[in-house]
Image (tube, rainbow, N blue to C red):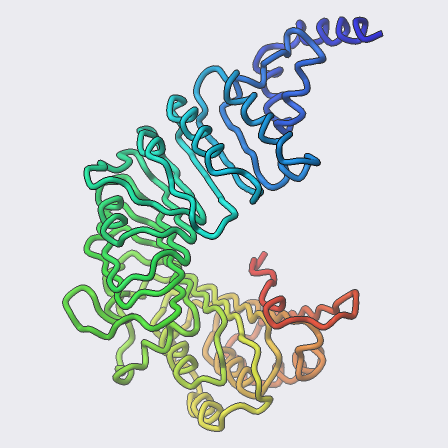
Length: 440
């Protein structure tokens, strides 16, 4: 029976063009692709030419013991023929570091272009020197590692995308790596080494993402930067040196900026020393603004947000992620500040869509919505989202109240998505932050 089945499979495989056969195996999970070798002699080791290898959480989860998964990985790498253009590893905290070192050594001879490593450890895995020999690397993404290349490391000349997550290194190492990667377009630094000063010299950089702590972020040369995400654990330095400065001066070195994603705590820096009456000219091209975890109880964050919004004359999409409030009414001074602003005086003429995530309907938040509605003559949609247990009033009642506000636009579509926890368990505030962001 087995030989008959294998004969049938051989007949089918012989009549399939090689590209179709490769496509079929390429779409199989790697575990199943390896097992396909028992079906047909023509399929045997076909998986050994796959150019994209992914050993992620789902791969490890499909095995009862991690040793079985490691055996498959060793089998794939030892018998592999040809280049491996893309390699991803992560999802298990049971892999020994010496195994990872061995696999990276195998890969050093495979012309890898995209390498992703997510180590589930306490940030004590040292990236081996073999990784530095990946001369054709275009994407490098690592997590929970130590990165200490030698002083004479020349960088990755073809690197386009660099993502470091919970990685420990010296600031000079990062500066050298960036400056020696002339084609770098995407740079993501999330909760890595705390910096006193972070200097970035990347003429082709288009997307920058930073989450963590830094007293000063310096862009020496980034004329192409279009997308910026910045979540600071503490304020950026107020040092008024020519390049390294507070958040206002930080933004001045991004003339092409079109999308800005910023945390509420970062807005406090805008108010240090008082806000000027003029808007930020550098934000003239920003079309999408997202403010995360904004605390409406904080007067500095609210005034900073209003100032930032008013500085974006071409703004089309605005997303506010409201932090959970402790006080239903909120500080009187903040409410008064919003009420004193009848409108943003034509500053958001092009604003079309607003998304208020984790919106509870407290007085301060309602006053902010009133200000937006009075200021946006082109507004088409305004969307609200939250768990029902965090709402001050039912979503329908809140929406009916907001429809009574003065609206500069005659055609605003209101949508309120009120989510009820199916299992009736208490909802943690952090869980409420995980919500849809897309406008579509």
